Amino acid sequence: MAETTHGIGGLKYDHSKRERPQELNVFIALILIVAVFEGLGFWLMGQSFLFDSGDRFDSIFNEARLQIIILQVAIIGIIAIGVTQVILTGGIDLSSGSIVGAAAMIAMSFAQVAEVNGFPNPKGIFIEQGWVDLPVIVPIAVGLACGVVAGGINGALVAYTKIPPFIATLGMMVTARGVAKWWSKGQPISFPTESYSKLGAGMTPVVIFLALAVLFHLILRYTVYGKHTYAIGSNEAAARMSGINVARHKVMVYTIAGVLASVAAIVLSSKNLTAQSGMGVMYELDAIAMAVIGGISLQGGRGSVIGTVIGALIFGVIISGFTFLRLDAYYQEMVKGAIIVGAVVLDQWRQNKGGKT
Amino acid sequence: MADIILKTEGLTKHYGGVHALTNANFEIRKGEHVAIMGDNGAGKSTFVRQITAVEQRTSGKITFDGKEVAFEGPLDAREAGIETVFQTLALADHLDVSDNLFLGREKILFKLGPFSILDYKGMREATRAALQKTGVKIPNFRNTIQNMSGGQRQCVAIARTATFHSKLTIMDEPTAALGVQETAQVENIVRTLKEAGEPLILISHNMRQVMDLCDRIVVFRRGQIVANLKKEETDGQDVVAYITGAKTQPEYAEAAA
Ligand SMILES: Nc1ncnc2c1ncn2[C@@H]1O[C@H](COP(=O)(O)OP(=O)(O)OP(=O)(O)O)[C@@H](O)[C@H]1O
Ligand SMILES: [Mg+2]
Image 1: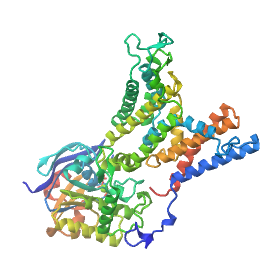
Image 2: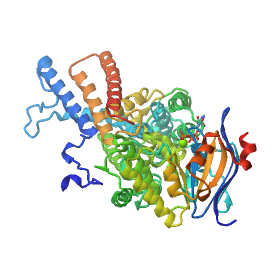
Image 3: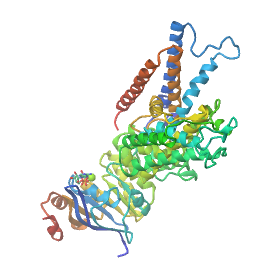
């Protein structure tokens, strides 16, 4: 009686009729979008989007393009992982882009070399104090600490003052951007140590993104932390009545989101070999878009990190597809906006169709 | 008195101007099954929410298991040994049955603080056993709660309290949405509690059920306790008279005036 393995009370249950997982739908969407760009590519450009291996025989893919796609979403993807768990609790985090800016500036100022070409570092922030040529662990620790503080404040505001997450993190968005500008009075901070500049070099952002994605997939799926994250987003009152310390859990969730934003800050500033106060502007919206495109419900409780990763890929494919079709950047922004709204509408529609709650 | 498990003195709850609960003096002994009856809006669920610290009371004193308590939240109440089936059921819609059954006290495979690894297998097996006790029919208990019927949801909530040993069980209208068979099963669970000597507060509108299962009936009316009746000394008509306001016990007359 294979049908009734999970059944109780003698009702039949047909496994083959099980609902398709959300992630599969998102993945199909990814394939369809690639197919659209392939079609447009042949029609408008006379060449393939992803399957142009440039006369090499060892591969059918255009590896260069694939690399660009994944590299350009990796850093915002790291943020999107943190934002995903915030949205799963039914919250939102608008501050991640600004946290990137502040954490990048502050971390970078502890990662500078003493001398450039034999002269004292012209951009040196802590030359007088002698805080130069520090071991790489120092800027990493300082950067992560920025994430802990900013995320922790977000979490505490949301959990204990009952300010809506939208407002609390909007405040942090403005404040952290202010910190980023104030830190060096608007000056860019450059000339990092060699060890720091390796943190975001080459494909390391991708490796870090994927490693964090796997880690957080496992955490959300197999740990108490993950279970409580979903429970709070699904029914906060029920979670509280079941004895979950909702406030403490939210502080953890927002703190981790802040930390992931600061990881992105370190990787990004290392990759660019410089930090500027405008770093990460609008990243929060891109990260939210990746999550929403990946099927994370803005109402909380639904979705997974796998969805977000696929959402990030869709995001990258679309941007890179537009570049491939030589579409103006203006159109890219407009279409990006439309896609985000479309994903939310789709989510609403799914919720309503999903029957009684 | 050592054998009183829960006692409230002057328990009062106001929601702004609404006096949902006024000066409730209530007690229940170990092993005793007490029913709370009263019309809609009489303050029964409000009373439960104050005891379990889902809300903070306006005033009054609560003594549980010999000690005066001031629970800060439902977690405290649960850890002290109060298991509750809330009228709202308190289920997370997007989680499956066993997730809900163990919500807030998951079985752990490997301890790592908040990142402790869940023992899914252990929880599923325990869930199956617990559900079989309630006799509920659930075609696939890996299904999320949102796709389940009202009665199935209620059975999950009841199975949750029945799975964990407690010093006091509270059920707020546990059989309201249940079919005949499931109601009988839940009543059997209640009888098992009685045999095990576990005390119960049962809120119900079902007179037959109350008369079958409980030793004592406390009647709420407009936020106040108006009667405290031993089962042997009363009958259905008598209780209805108290519920509707045709009668009030003399010792509560001044409060209810
Ligand atoms: N959060 C709240 N804010 C304002 N008024 C409330 C609140 N909760 C309950 N009330 C009011 O308190 C009164 C008592 O409600 P309660 O839920 O305790 O009734 P009940 O006896 O459980 O009724 P039922 O049999 O319908 O479940 C009602 O008049 C209700 O409207
Ligand atoms: Mg009620």
